[in-house]
Length: 279
Length: 347
Ligand SMILES: Nc1ncnc2c1ncn2[C@@H]1O[C@H](COP(=O)(O)OP(=O)(O)OP(=O)(O)O)[C@@H](O)[C@H]1O
Ligand SMILES: [Mg+2]
Image 1 (cartoon, rainbow over the protein chains, first blue to last red):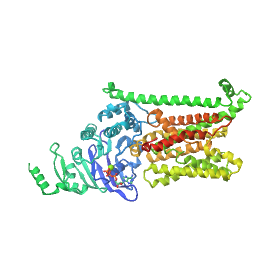
Image 2 (cartoon, each protein chain N blue to C red):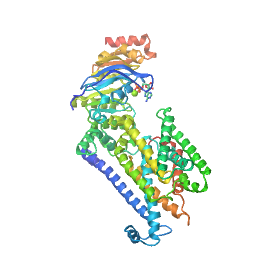
Image 3 (tube, helix red, strand yellow):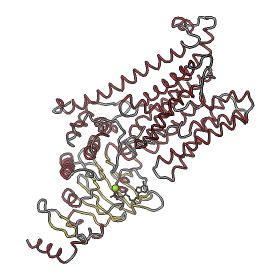
Image 4 (cartoon, each protein chain N blue to C red):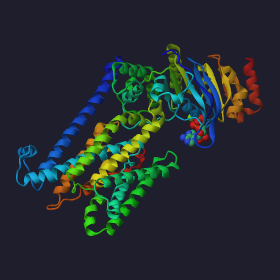
């Protein structure tokens, strides 16, 4: 349980039909670190994550878990090593929070190994970690969007995997809960050595919480490395087609992106930035 | 609840146990209800048999009149009703859960109509009898399922489209069945009437035995795949993340649901709306996630209860049971169509 598993992709091509979405992508996910994938809408982040979680069969190339092609491994065995929080999961009506989070335990159960005390502890720990213990007996369909998101994260946590893939775990969350979730992931990473791979839209939070970042543009990696190497004016300009300036986060010291919209893009903005940089 | 907040594992245990208890109690209550309704069907009616007499008959004692009615008519009817109801119920719940749409049950989307159209075609045109009819029904059901799969694929993940195409298929196939009936001579026509509405009137021990064999093979498969179904309820991605081999389990469940619907149809004809009603009723009773045993029991209960009504509503005549279930199911179908906002949120 302490970061023994490695995940990566080699010349991976993924798509849903004829046109590939992710093309000849190679990637090494640093073991026991937090990696975030950033990029514009529809650039293929979810597709890549689904590919890594062997939800899509590659058109070419391979996803490697511990050096072996993930499609050659039994699905249940993979599920004990790698958990996934999809971008838009659905819960059937009337399912209680404990039931849902409890399903995270299913890779550890089988015909002869049913619900046990270990499952109870894992579910309880996951609920506590996500601050959803007081929702335990509620049904998922009557929760708010943010509560629901945290319950789904709890399900992924209850799976107790060494590698955790999360697709936009902070959508629907207010700013405090966004930071809570990222703190939670950082904590998990530090205490258990869990390898975390998350798709995030907030570049500043991504830069603050990641050890490693991957920027995607149209299904290809345009930059990968520590946040300071990825979150640059040039890369953000390429990836999002947006002018910006990057300063130091006064709290964390990580890069902080200040967008320059069309309105602020004039000389006044440049002057303000220059003044800020001098101060 | 709140007193347990400082003991999280105990809280989880209490919620989990409460849920399990409810499922166990509901399934137990349904089992009792099914058995009671089974006995009522066998014992009551225009010819009432007392419980002691019934036990004596089962023990092999010959009671003039009663023995024949019980052994050759009422008992096989009730057995076929019970098994077919359970098969319809499980089939419906599987389809509705898999396609995440309460409208997507095999009797609404034309699988049972396909099975009966194929059976009638076999009887009227090809002169097939006996077990061959069941195989034809199975083939007809599978063919409709395959057609739906191909036709709905263009619409991406939209189950709505599949349901609409399916409703169209059902109407078309019912027209085919009706047409074949008008083409057949009077003796065959009365024989195939059952394929129009669904009825227990022609139930024989032979039919009951076939059905017992088929459900005895298929229901354990359902129990085996139920685990995967619980994963798929959360969406394909989440299911795969939990280690469910999605494509394989999905295909297996669809084939299973079609096979169950088809073998039940082969025995009783397309008893309307049993598959459609069972899942939602079971869900309502359990207050939550799908339970295949509960859905199967509800299906059996619906058929047996409808049979009681059908046998006793009009004095001197036995209505086809499908007429009664049809009358029950139609308002629910309308209600679902009208309150369309809930469509697509799972059966
Ligand atoms: N199931 C699917 N079938 C066909 N095409 C798909 C499917 N899912 C995604 N796509 C297409 O693949 C492309 C990439 O989608 P993807 O979901 O990977 O984007 P993303 O980077 O996660 O975007 P977002 O930030 O909006 O979540 C899009 O053009 C999308 O239309
Ligand atoms: Mg996405």
